[in-house]
Length: 275
Length: 304
Image (tube, rainbow over all chains, first blue to last red; front, side, top):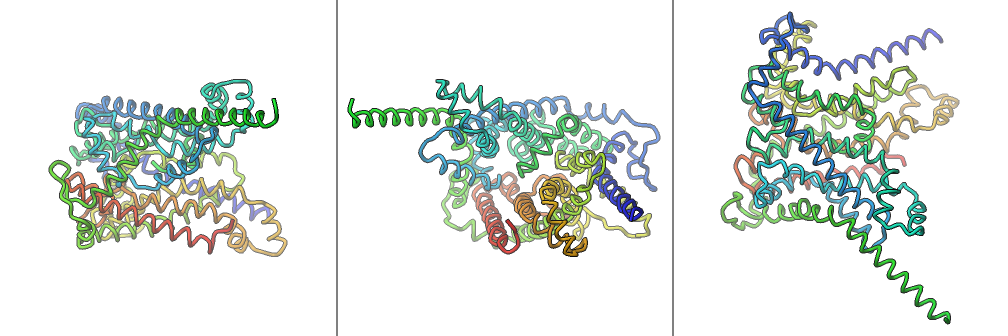
Protein backbone atom coordinates (compact mmCIF):
# COMPACT_ATOMS: atom_id res chain seq x y z
CA UNK A 1 0.00 0.00 0.00
CA UNK A 2 2.72 2.44 1.02
CA UNK A 3 4.79 1.61 -2.05
CA UNK A 4 1.81 2.12 -4.32
CA UNK A 5 1.19 5.55 -2.80
CA UNK A 6 4.76 6.63 -3.32
CA UNK A 7 4.63 5.46 -6.93
CA UNK A 8 1.41 7.29 -7.70
CA UNK A 9 2.78 10.41 -6.05
CA UNK A 10 5.89 10.23 -8.19
CA UNK A 11 3.75 9.78 -11.28
CA UNK A 12 1.65 12.85 -10.41
CA UNK A 13 4.74 14.96 -9.86
CA UNK A 14 6.22 13.73 -13.12
CA UNK A 15 3.05 14.67 -15.01
CA UNK A 16 2.84 18.07 -13.31
CA UNK A 17 6.42 18.82 -14.33
CA UNK A 18 5.77 17.59 -17.86
CA UNK A 19 2.78 19.93 -18.25
CA UNK A 20 4.80 22.77 -16.75
CA UNK A 21 7.52 22.12 -19.31
CA UNK A 22 5.02 22.22 -22.18
CA UNK A 23 3.69 25.50 -20.83
CA UNK A 24 7.04 27.27 -20.54
CA UNK A 25 8.89 25.62 -23.41
CA UNK A 26 7.95 28.35 -25.95
CA UNK A 27 9.11 31.02 -23.49
CA UNK A 28 12.46 29.34 -22.93
CA UNK A 29 12.83 28.86 -26.67
CA UNK A 30 12.07 32.55 -27.18
CA UNK A 31 14.51 33.87 -24.60
CA UNK A 32 17.33 31.57 -25.71
CA UNK A 33 16.54 32.29 -29.36
CA UNK A 34 16.83 36.00 -28.73
CA UNK A 35 20.56 35.66 -28.00
CA UNK A 36 21.39 33.12 -30.69
CA UNK A 37 23.10 33.66 -33.99
CA UNK A 38 20.81 33.47 -36.98
CA UNK A 39 22.37 30.20 -38.11
CA UNK A 40 21.88 28.61 -34.70
CA UNK A 41 18.14 29.06 -34.38
CA UNK A 42 17.07 26.33 -36.79
CA UNK A 43 20.28 24.33 -36.63
CA UNK A 44 20.14 20.55 -37.16
CA UNK A 45 20.49 18.91 -34.70
CA UNK A 46 18.65 21.27 -32.41
CA UNK A 47 20.72 23.59 -30.27
CA UNK A 48 19.03 24.89 -27.15
CA UNK A 49 21.94 27.01 -25.94
CA UNK A 50 23.82 29.54 -28.08
CA UNK A 51 27.57 29.12 -28.36
CA UNK A 52 28.12 32.68 -27.20
CA UNK A 53 25.13 34.85 -26.32
CA UNK A 54 24.57 37.50 -28.98
CA UNK A 55 23.38 40.47 -26.91
CA UNK A 56 23.71 42.60 -30.00
CA UNK A 57 20.32 41.28 -31.17
CA UNK A 58 18.71 43.53 -28.60
CA UNK A 59 20.54 46.69 -29.59
CA UNK A 60 19.80 45.87 -33.23
CA UNK A 61 16.09 45.92 -32.49
CA UNK A 62 16.40 49.38 -30.97
CA UNK A 63 18.24 50.58 -34.06
CA UNK A 64 15.58 49.31 -36.43
CA UNK A 65 12.42 50.40 -34.62
CA UNK A 66 11.67 52.99 -31.90
CA UNK A 67 11.12 50.38 -29.23
CA UNK A 68 11.35 52.79 -26.30
CA UNK A 69 8.57 54.81 -27.90
CA UNK A 70 6.46 51.63 -28.10
CA UNK A 71 6.99 51.00 -24.39
CA UNK A 72 6.02 54.55 -23.53
CA UNK A 73 2.92 54.50 -25.77
CA UNK A 74 1.73 51.21 -24.33
CA UNK A 75 2.30 52.25 -20.73
CA UNK A 76 0.50 55.55 -21.29
CA UNK A 77 -2.53 53.91 -22.88
CA UNK A 78 -2.70 51.11 -20.30
CA UNK A 79 -2.36 53.38 -17.26
CA UNK A 80 -4.83 56.05 -18.39
CA UNK A 81 -7.32 53.47 -19.66
CA UNK A 82 -7.21 51.66 -16.33
CA UNK A 83 -7.52 54.78 -14.16
CA UNK A 84 -10.51 56.08 -16.07
CA UNK A 85 -12.24 52.77 -16.17
CA UNK A 86 -11.91 52.15 -12.44
CA UNK A 87 -13.30 55.61 -11.62
CA UNK A 88 -16.35 55.65 -13.93
CA UNK A 89 -17.18 52.02 -13.23
CA UNK A 90 -16.90 52.43 -9.45
CA UNK A 91 -19.29 55.40 -9.47
CA UNK A 92 -21.84 53.50 -11.56
CA UNK A 93 -21.42 50.36 -9.54
CA UNK A 94 -22.23 52.32 -6.39
CA UNK A 95 -25.48 53.60 -7.91
CA UNK A 96 -26.39 50.10 -9.09
CA UNK A 97 -25.75 48.51 -5.72
CA UNK A 98 -26.39 51.02 -2.94
CA UNK A 99 -28.79 53.64 -4.28
CA UNK A 100 -32.45 53.08 -5.07
CA UNK A 101 -34.14 54.47 -8.13
CA UNK A 102 -36.76 53.31 -10.56
CA UNK A 103 -35.58 51.17 -13.44
CA UNK A 104 -32.30 50.34 -11.73
CA UNK A 105 -32.34 46.63 -12.39
CA UNK A 106 -33.62 47.01 -15.94
CA UNK A 107 -30.80 49.39 -16.74
CA UNK A 108 -28.30 47.01 -15.20
CA UNK A 109 -29.62 44.12 -17.29
CA UNK A 110 -29.20 46.32 -20.32
CA UNK A 111 -25.53 46.83 -19.39
CA UNK A 112 -25.09 43.09 -19.00
CA UNK A 113 -26.69 42.33 -22.34
CA UNK A 114 -24.19 44.47 -24.21
CA UNK A 115 -21.31 42.41 -22.78
CA UNK A 116 -22.23 39.55 -25.11
CA UNK A 117 -21.78 41.57 -28.28
CA UNK A 118 -18.53 40.83 -30.13
CA UNK A 119 -16.15 43.71 -30.79
CA UNK A 120 -16.51 43.28 -34.54
CA UNK A 121 -20.07 44.59 -34.34
CA UNK A 122 -19.03 47.93 -32.88
CA UNK A 123 -15.71 48.42 -34.60
CA UNK A 124 -16.87 50.08 -37.84
CA UNK A 125 -19.13 52.70 -36.21
CA UNK A 126 -16.47 53.33 -33.56
CA UNK A 127 -13.96 53.99 -36.32
CA UNK A 128 -16.36 56.36 -38.01
CA UNK A 129 -17.12 58.10 -34.71
CA UNK A 130 -13.44 58.57 -33.89
CA UNK A 131 -12.92 59.91 -37.37
CA UNK A 132 -15.60 62.55 -36.71
CA UNK A 133 -14.04 63.43 -33.37
CA UNK A 134 -10.68 63.77 -35.10
CA UNK A 135 -9.23 61.09 -32.84
CA UNK A 136 -7.89 58.62 -35.40
CA UNK A 137 -4.23 57.80 -34.94
CA UNK A 138 -4.55 59.16 -31.41
CA UNK A 139 -4.00 57.28 -28.17
CA UNK A 140 -7.08 58.85 -26.63
CA UNK A 141 -9.22 56.66 -28.86
CA UNK A 142 -7.87 53.53 -27.22
CA UNK A 143 -8.12 55.09 -23.77
CA UNK A 144 -11.68 56.40 -24.17
CA UNK A 145 -12.99 53.12 -25.53
CA UNK A 146 -11.95 51.42 -22.29
CA UNK A 147 -13.38 53.94 -19.87
CA UNK A 148 -17.00 52.94 -20.15
CA UNK A 149 -16.72 49.20 -19.85
CA UNK A 150 -19.95 47.42 -18.83
CA UNK A 151 -17.76 44.62 -17.56
CA UNK A 152 -16.05 46.90 -15.05
CA UNK A 153 -19.44 48.03 -13.77
CA UNK A 154 -20.55 44.42 -13.47
CA UNK A 155 -17.44 43.26 -11.60
CA UNK A 156 -17.49 46.09 -9.05
CA UNK A 157 -21.26 45.97 -8.57
CA UNK A 158 -21.06 42.28 -7.69
CA UNK A 159 -18.52 43.11 -5.03
CA UNK A 160 -20.29 46.19 -3.67
CA UNK A 161 -23.47 44.14 -3.22
CA UNK A 162 -21.63 41.87 -0.81
CA UNK A 163 -20.88 44.86 1.44
CA UNK A 164 -23.70 45.00 4.03
CA UNK A 165 -26.28 47.73 3.43
CA UNK A 166 -26.35 48.39 7.18
CA UNK A 167 -22.92 50.03 6.97
CA UNK A 168 -24.24 52.46 4.38
CA UNK A 169 -27.47 53.04 6.31
CA UNK A 170 -25.57 53.77 9.49
CA UNK A 171 -23.46 56.38 7.74
CA UNK A 172 -26.61 57.94 6.25
CA UNK A 173 -28.22 58.22 9.67
CA UNK A 174 -25.05 59.93 10.87
CA UNK A 175 -25.76 62.48 8.17
CA UNK A 176 -22.97 61.54 5.76
CA UNK A 177 -23.49 62.47 2.13
CA UNK A 178 -23.43 59.78 -0.54
CA UNK A 179 -20.11 60.93 -1.97
CA UNK A 180 -18.59 60.64 1.48
CA UNK A 181 -20.11 57.20 2.04
CA UNK A 182 -18.75 56.11 -1.30
CA UNK A 183 -15.22 57.32 -0.61
CA UNK A 184 -14.93 56.49 3.08
CA UNK A 185 -17.09 53.38 3.53
CA UNK A 186 -17.30 51.53 0.22
CA UNK A 187 -13.96 52.25 -1.42
CA UNK A 188 -11.73 51.08 1.47
CA UNK A 189 -13.75 47.85 1.80
CA UNK A 190 -13.65 47.17 -1.93
CA UNK A 191 -9.88 47.19 -2.24
CA UNK A 192 -9.66 43.57 -3.44
CA UNK A 193 -12.22 44.26 -6.17
CA UNK A 194 -10.32 47.35 -7.25
CA UNK A 195 -7.09 45.38 -7.36
CA UNK A 196 -8.74 42.73 -9.52
CA UNK A 197 -10.27 45.20 -11.96
CA UNK A 198 -7.04 47.18 -12.14
CA UNK A 199 -4.82 44.22 -13.01
CA UNK A 200 -7.35 42.89 -15.47
CA UNK A 201 -7.92 46.16 -17.30
CA UNK A 202 -4.23 46.97 -17.33
CA UNK A 203 -3.41 43.54 -18.76
CA UNK A 204 -6.10 43.74 -21.42
CA UNK A 205 -5.11 47.24 -22.44
CA UNK A 206 -1.44 46.25 -22.55
CA UNK A 207 -2.11 43.18 -24.70
CA UNK A 208 -4.76 44.71 -26.93
CA UNK A 209 -4.11 44.26 -30.61
CA UNK A 210 -7.24 44.87 -32.67
CA UNK A 211 -7.85 48.41 -31.42
CA UNK A 212 -4.34 49.70 -32.17
CA UNK A 213 -4.43 47.85 -35.50
CA UNK A 214 -7.54 49.70 -36.58
CA UNK A 215 -7.02 53.12 -35.01
CA UNK A 216 -3.26 53.75 -35.24
CA UNK A 217 -1.36 54.16 -38.49
CA UNK A 218 1.87 55.96 -37.62
CA UNK A 219 4.87 54.05 -36.39
CA UNK A 220 5.59 56.62 -33.68
CA UNK A 221 2.12 55.98 -32.22
CA UNK A 222 2.34 52.18 -32.16
CA UNK A 223 1.87 50.17 -28.99
CA UNK A 224 4.07 47.15 -28.26
CA UNK A 225 1.70 44.65 -29.86
CA UNK A 226 1.62 46.69 -33.05
CA UNK A 227 5.37 47.23 -32.78
CA UNK A 228 6.32 43.56 -32.69
CA UNK A 229 3.83 42.80 -35.45
CA UNK A 230 5.34 45.60 -37.52
CA UNK A 231 8.80 44.25 -36.82
CA UNK A 232 7.72 40.77 -37.89
CA UNK A 233 6.36 42.16 -41.16
CA UNK A 234 9.38 44.34 -41.95
CA UNK A 235 12.14 41.94 -40.94
CA UNK A 236 10.35 38.63 -41.47
CA UNK A 237 13.47 36.49 -41.79
CA UNK A 238 15.44 38.04 -38.94
CA UNK A 239 14.09 35.46 -36.53
CA UNK A 240 16.57 36.09 -33.75
CA UNK A 241 15.73 39.80 -33.73
CA UNK A 242 12.03 38.94 -33.76
CA UNK A 243 12.67 36.80 -30.68
CA UNK A 244 14.49 39.69 -29.01
CA UNK A 245 11.59 42.02 -29.75
CA UNK A 246 8.93 39.64 -28.43
CA UNK A 247 11.02 38.96 -25.33
CA UNK A 248 11.26 42.67 -24.65
CA UNK A 249 7.53 43.16 -25.21
CA UNK A 250 6.79 40.48 -22.60
CA UNK A 251 9.26 41.51 -19.89
CA UNK A 252 7.17 44.26 -18.22
CA UNK A 253 4.03 42.16 -18.00
CA UNK A 254 5.98 39.14 -16.74
CA UNK A 255 7.57 41.26 -14.01
CA UNK A 256 4.19 42.57 -12.92
CA UNK A 257 2.80 39.04 -13.04
CA UNK A 258 5.54 37.79 -10.73
CA UNK A 259 4.79 40.55 -8.24
CA UNK A 260 1.00 40.37 -8.33
CA UNK A 261 0.22 36.90 -9.63
CA UNK A 262 -2.48 36.37 -7.04
CA UNK A 263 -4.53 39.24 -8.47
CA UNK A 264 -3.93 38.13 -12.04
CA UNK A 265 -5.04 34.56 -11.47
CA UNK A 266 -8.00 35.42 -9.29
CA UNK A 267 -9.00 38.35 -11.44
CA UNK A 268 -8.97 36.48 -14.71
CA UNK A 269 -10.52 33.40 -13.20
CA UNK A 270 -13.30 35.51 -11.70
CA UNK A 271 -13.99 37.42 -14.84
CA UNK A 272 -14.10 34.80 -17.51
CA UNK A 273 -13.23 37.53 -19.96
CA UNK A 274 -9.97 36.89 -21.66
CA UNK A 275 -7.43 39.33 -22.99
CA UNK B 1 -50.91 67.56 14.92
CA UNK B 2 -53.48 64.87 14.06
CA UNK B 3 -52.58 61.49 12.63
CA UNK B 4 -53.50 62.22 8.99
CA UNK B 5 -51.21 65.24 8.84
CA UNK B 6 -48.43 63.22 10.43
CA UNK B 7 -48.70 60.56 7.77
CA UNK B 8 -48.69 63.22 5.06
CA UNK B 9 -45.56 64.83 6.43
CA UNK B 10 -43.90 61.44 6.71
CA UNK B 11 -44.81 60.59 3.15
CA UNK B 12 -43.54 63.91 1.88
CA UNK B 13 -40.29 63.36 3.73
CA UNK B 14 -40.05 59.89 2.25
CA UNK B 15 -40.79 61.20 -1.23
CA UNK B 16 -38.21 63.91 -1.00
CA UNK B 17 -35.74 61.36 0.35
CA UNK B 18 -36.44 59.10 -2.63
CA UNK B 19 -36.09 61.99 -5.02
CA UNK B 20 -32.79 63.04 -3.47
CA UNK B 21 -31.50 59.51 -3.77
CA UNK B 22 -32.57 59.30 -7.41
CA UNK B 23 -30.79 62.56 -8.16
CA UNK B 24 -27.62 61.32 -6.48
CA UNK B 25 -27.89 58.11 -8.45
CA UNK B 26 -28.07 60.07 -11.69
CA UNK B 27 -24.92 61.96 -10.76
CA UNK B 28 -23.09 58.75 -9.96
CA UNK B 29 -24.25 57.08 -13.16
CA UNK B 30 -23.73 59.85 -15.62
CA UNK B 31 -20.00 59.66 -16.41
CA UNK B 32 -20.14 55.99 -17.27
CA UNK B 33 -23.60 56.00 -18.80
CA UNK B 34 -22.92 58.82 -21.24
CA UNK B 35 -19.79 57.12 -22.53
CA UNK B 36 -21.62 53.82 -22.63
CA UNK B 37 -24.33 55.35 -24.82
CA UNK B 38 -21.90 57.09 -27.16
CA UNK B 39 -19.18 54.47 -27.52
CA UNK B 40 -21.11 51.22 -27.15
CA UNK B 41 -24.90 51.52 -27.56
CA UNK B 42 -24.76 53.92 -30.49
CA UNK B 43 -22.19 51.83 -32.43
CA UNK B 44 -24.21 48.65 -31.87
CA UNK B 45 -27.31 50.26 -33.40
CA UNK B 46 -25.41 52.14 -36.09
CA UNK B 47 -23.76 48.94 -37.18
CA UNK B 48 -27.11 47.27 -37.73
CA UNK B 49 -28.25 50.32 -39.69
CA UNK B 50 -25.27 50.45 -42.04
CA UNK B 51 -25.47 46.72 -42.66
CA UNK B 52 -28.36 47.60 -44.99
CA UNK B 53 -26.23 50.00 -47.00
CA UNK B 54 -23.50 49.85 -49.56
CA UNK B 55 -20.95 52.20 -48.07
CA UNK B 56 -17.18 52.73 -48.21
CA UNK B 57 -17.08 55.02 -45.20
CA UNK B 58 -16.55 58.20 -47.20
CA UNK B 59 -18.99 58.78 -50.05
CA UNK B 60 -22.75 58.49 -50.06
CA UNK B 61 -24.27 55.39 -48.59
CA UNK B 62 -26.66 53.57 -50.88
CA UNK B 63 -29.57 51.70 -49.31
CA UNK B 64 -29.64 48.13 -50.61
CA UNK B 65 -31.97 46.38 -48.17
CA UNK B 66 -30.86 42.89 -47.19
CA UNK B 67 -28.52 42.63 -50.19
CA UNK B 68 -25.42 42.42 -47.96
CA UNK B 69 -26.91 39.52 -46.06
CA UNK B 70 -27.85 37.74 -49.28
CA UNK B 71 -24.46 38.36 -50.80
CA UNK B 72 -22.45 36.89 -47.96
CA UNK B 73 -24.06 33.50 -48.37
CA UNK B 74 -22.86 33.45 -51.97
CA UNK B 75 -19.29 34.33 -51.00
CA UNK B 76 -17.06 31.27 -50.85
CA UNK B 77 -14.58 32.98 -48.48
CA UNK B 78 -17.40 33.63 -46.03
CA UNK B 79 -18.42 29.97 -46.20
CA UNK B 80 -14.86 28.76 -45.70
CA UNK B 81 -14.35 31.15 -42.79
CA UNK B 82 -17.59 30.01 -41.22
CA UNK B 83 -16.63 26.32 -41.38
CA UNK B 84 -13.13 27.11 -40.12
CA UNK B 85 -14.73 28.83 -37.14
CA UNK B 86 -16.92 25.81 -36.47
CA UNK B 87 -13.94 23.45 -36.80
CA UNK B 88 -11.87 25.65 -34.50
CA UNK B 89 -14.60 25.79 -31.86
CA UNK B 90 -15.45 22.09 -31.97
CA UNK B 91 -11.79 21.10 -31.64
CA UNK B 92 -10.41 23.65 -29.18
CA UNK B 93 -13.27 24.02 -26.71
CA UNK B 94 -13.85 20.35 -25.76
CA UNK B 95 -10.14 19.46 -25.83
CA UNK B 96 -8.96 22.38 -23.76
CA UNK B 97 -11.64 21.72 -21.17
CA UNK B 98 -10.92 17.98 -21.12
CA UNK B 99 -7.19 18.62 -20.65
CA UNK B 100 -8.08 21.32 -18.14
CA UNK B 101 -9.98 18.76 -16.06
CA UNK B 102 -7.04 16.33 -16.16
CA UNK B 103 -4.59 19.03 -15.11
CA UNK B 104 -6.95 20.20 -12.36
CA UNK B 105 -7.12 16.63 -11.04
CA UNK B 106 -3.32 16.48 -10.98
CA UNK B 107 -3.19 19.79 -9.14
CA UNK B 108 -5.80 18.69 -6.63
CA UNK B 109 -3.26 16.71 -4.62
CA UNK B 110 -1.53 17.69 -1.43
CA UNK B 111 1.94 18.38 -2.73
CA UNK B 112 4.21 21.11 -1.45
CA UNK B 113 4.85 23.90 -3.90
CA UNK B 114 1.71 23.28 -5.95
CA UNK B 115 1.35 27.08 -6.12
CA UNK B 116 4.40 27.23 -8.38
CA UNK B 117 2.64 25.03 -10.91
CA UNK B 118 -0.42 27.23 -10.78
CA UNK B 119 1.69 30.27 -11.64
CA UNK B 120 3.35 28.46 -14.54
CA UNK B 121 0.13 27.00 -15.96
CA UNK B 122 -1.44 30.41 -15.97
CA UNK B 123 1.49 32.06 -17.73
CA UNK B 124 0.29 31.59 -21.35
CA UNK B 125 -2.98 33.30 -20.45
CA UNK B 126 -1.41 36.58 -19.36
CA UNK B 127 1.04 36.94 -22.25
CA UNK B 128 -0.13 38.71 -25.36
CA UNK B 129 -1.41 36.42 -28.07
CA UNK B 130 0.47 38.40 -30.70
CA UNK B 131 3.84 37.90 -29.01
CA UNK B 132 3.32 34.26 -28.20
CA UNK B 133 1.77 33.60 -31.62
CA UNK B 134 4.90 34.94 -33.29
CA UNK B 135 7.05 32.73 -31.05
CA UNK B 136 4.94 29.68 -31.91
CA UNK B 137 5.46 30.23 -35.63
CA UNK B 138 9.15 29.54 -35.00
CA UNK B 139 8.46 26.66 -32.60
CA UNK B 140 6.44 25.01 -35.36
CA UNK B 141 8.87 25.93 -38.14
CA UNK B 142 10.10 23.11 -40.39
CA UNK B 143 13.33 22.77 -38.41
CA UNK B 144 11.93 24.11 -35.18
CA UNK B 145 12.01 22.25 -31.86
CA UNK B 146 8.73 20.39 -32.38
CA UNK B 147 9.68 18.86 -35.70
CA UNK B 148 13.21 18.05 -34.59
CA UNK B 149 11.72 16.31 -31.58
CA UNK B 150 9.42 14.31 -33.85
CA UNK B 151 12.35 13.45 -36.13
CA UNK B 152 14.49 12.12 -33.31
CA UNK B 153 11.60 9.80 -32.54
CA UNK B 154 11.75 8.40 -36.01
CA UNK B 155 9.17 10.47 -37.85
CA UNK B 156 10.81 11.08 -41.19
CA UNK B 157 8.43 13.61 -42.66
CA UNK B 158 6.89 15.61 -39.83
CA UNK B 159 4.02 17.95 -40.79
CA UNK B 160 4.82 21.33 -42.28
CA UNK B 161 2.41 22.82 -39.73
CA UNK B 162 1.69 26.44 -40.58
CA UNK B 163 2.80 26.29 -44.19
CA UNK B 164 0.60 23.36 -45.14
CA UNK B 165 -3.08 23.85 -45.92
CA UNK B 166 -3.80 20.55 -44.29
CA UNK B 167 -2.15 21.33 -40.94
CA UNK B 168 -2.38 25.10 -40.59
CA UNK B 169 -5.77 25.20 -38.86
CA UNK B 170 -4.77 22.32 -36.61
CA UNK B 171 -1.55 24.16 -35.69
CA UNK B 172 -3.52 27.23 -34.68
CA UNK B 173 -5.86 25.01 -32.68
CA UNK B 174 -2.95 23.38 -30.88
CA UNK B 175 -1.61 26.78 -29.84
CA UNK B 176 -5.03 27.87 -28.68
CA UNK B 177 -5.46 24.72 -26.58
CA UNK B 178 -1.98 25.22 -25.17
CA UNK B 179 -2.94 28.73 -24.16
CA UNK B 180 -6.30 28.02 -22.54
CA UNK B 181 -5.96 24.62 -20.87
CA UNK B 182 -4.03 25.93 -17.87
CA UNK B 183 -6.57 28.69 -17.44
CA UNK B 184 -9.40 26.15 -17.48
CA UNK B 185 -7.47 24.03 -15.02
CA UNK B 186 -7.22 26.88 -12.52
CA UNK B 187 -10.96 27.55 -12.71
CA UNK B 188 -11.86 23.86 -12.56
CA UNK B 189 -9.50 23.34 -9.63
CA UNK B 190 -11.51 25.86 -7.64
CA UNK B 191 -14.60 23.83 -8.51
CA UNK B 192 -12.93 20.56 -7.49
CA UNK B 193 -11.92 21.95 -4.13
CA UNK B 194 -15.50 22.92 -3.48
CA UNK B 195 -16.72 19.32 -3.67
CA UNK B 196 -17.70 17.92 -0.29
CA UNK B 197 -15.21 15.22 0.77
CA UNK B 198 -18.02 13.25 2.44
CA UNK B 199 -19.45 12.44 -0.97
CA UNK B 200 -16.26 10.59 -1.86
CA UNK B 201 -16.26 8.77 1.47
CA UNK B 202 -19.87 7.69 0.95
CA UNK B 203 -19.10 6.46 -2.57
CA UNK B 204 -16.07 4.55 -1.25
CA UNK B 205 -18.17 2.85 1.41
CA UNK B 206 -20.65 1.87 -1.30
CA UNK B 207 -17.75 0.19 -3.07
CA UNK B 208 -17.20 2.64 -5.93
CA UNK B 209 -13.74 2.45 -7.51
CA UNK B 210 -11.60 5.36 -8.63
CA UNK B 211 -13.18 5.53 -12.08
CA UNK B 212 -16.71 5.23 -10.80
CA UNK B 213 -16.07 7.94 -8.22
CA UNK B 214 -14.81 10.16 -11.01
CA UNK B 215 -17.83 9.66 -13.27
CA UNK B 216 -20.49 9.51 -10.55
CA UNK B 217 -19.21 12.09 -8.06
CA UNK B 218 -16.56 14.36 -9.57
CA UNK B 219 -18.10 15.05 -12.97
CA UNK B 220 -21.68 15.71 -11.75
CA UNK B 221 -20.47 17.92 -8.91
CA UNK B 222 -18.12 19.78 -11.24
CA UNK B 223 -20.69 20.19 -14.01
CA UNK B 224 -21.66 23.80 -13.20
CA UNK B 225 -18.01 24.85 -13.43
CA UNK B 226 -17.52 22.84 -16.62
CA UNK B 227 -20.58 24.51 -18.08
CA UNK B 228 -19.22 27.95 -17.20
CA UNK B 229 -15.90 27.14 -18.91
CA UNK B 230 -17.72 25.75 -21.91
CA UNK B 231 -19.83 28.85 -22.48
CA UNK B 232 -16.96 31.28 -21.94
CA UNK B 233 -14.53 29.35 -24.11
CA UNK B 234 -17.05 29.01 -26.88
CA UNK B 235 -17.89 32.71 -26.98
CA UNK B 236 -14.17 33.49 -26.99
CA UNK B 237 -13.35 30.92 -29.64
CA UNK B 238 -15.73 32.48 -32.15
CA UNK B 239 -13.89 35.76 -31.68
CA UNK B 240 -10.39 34.41 -32.30
CA UNK B 241 -8.43 37.11 -34.12
CA UNK B 242 -5.01 37.93 -32.63
CA UNK B 243 -3.86 34.33 -33.02
CA UNK B 244 -4.75 34.28 -36.72
CA UNK B 245 -3.24 37.69 -37.32
CA UNK B 246 0.07 36.78 -35.65
CA UNK B 247 0.42 33.26 -37.01
CA UNK B 248 -1.16 32.84 -40.43
CA UNK B 249 -3.10 35.90 -41.66
CA UNK B 250 -5.79 33.47 -42.75
CA UNK B 251 -3.42 31.44 -44.89
CA UNK B 252 -2.02 29.48 -46.52
CA UNK B 253 -4.67 30.23 -49.10
CA UNK B 254 -7.82 30.48 -47.04
CA UNK B 255 -7.01 27.55 -44.78
CA UNK B 256 -7.20 29.52 -41.52
CA UNK B 257 -9.51 32.33 -42.51
CA UNK B 258 -12.06 32.90 -39.76
CA UNK B 259 -15.03 35.27 -39.53
CA UNK B 260 -13.36 37.95 -37.41
CA UNK B 261 -10.47 38.10 -39.83
CA UNK B 262 -12.89 38.16 -42.75
CA UNK B 263 -14.80 41.06 -41.16
CA UNK B 264 -11.60 42.96 -40.46
CA UNK B 265 -10.46 42.60 -44.07
CA UNK B 266 -13.79 43.59 -45.59
CA UNK B 267 -13.92 46.65 -43.33
CA UNK B 268 -10.36 47.93 -43.24
CA UNK B 269 -8.74 46.50 -46.33
CA UNK B 270 -11.64 46.69 -48.84
CA UNK B 271 -13.43 49.53 -46.98
CA UNK B 272 -16.79 47.84 -47.42
CA UNK B 273 -18.32 49.07 -44.18
CA UNK B 274 -21.88 47.97 -44.91
CA UNK B 275 -20.93 44.45 -45.87
CA UNK B 276 -18.50 44.08 -42.94
CA UNK B 277 -21.23 45.14 -40.52
CA UNK B 278 -23.63 42.60 -41.99
CA UNK B 279 -21.08 39.82 -41.45
CA UNK B 280 -20.44 41.09 -37.91
CA UNK B 281 -24.14 40.77 -37.14
CA UNK B 282 -24.18 37.25 -38.57
CA UNK B 283 -21.25 36.40 -36.28
CA UNK B 284 -23.17 37.83 -33.35
CA UNK B 285 -26.19 35.72 -34.31
CA UNK B 286 -24.05 32.58 -34.53
CA UNK B 287 -22.63 33.21 -31.05
CA UNK B 288 -26.14 33.78 -29.69
CA UNK B 289 -27.44 30.56 -31.23
CA UNK B 290 -24.56 28.48 -29.87
CA UNK B 291 -24.95 30.05 -26.42
CA UNK B 292 -28.68 29.35 -26.44
CA UNK B 293 -28.09 25.74 -27.46
CA UNK B 294 -25.76 25.33 -24.52
CA UNK B 295 -28.18 26.90 -22.10
CA UNK B 296 -30.93 24.59 -23.32
CA UNK B 297 -28.62 21.57 -23.34
CA UNK B 298 -27.36 22.21 -19.81
CA UNK B 299 -30.64 20.99 -18.30
CA UNK B 300 -29.72 17.50 -19.45
CA UNK B 301 -26.30 17.30 -17.82
CA UNK B 302 -25.58 20.18 -15.47
CA UNK B 303 -26.25 19.37 -11.85
CA UNK B 304 -27.16 22.34 -9.66
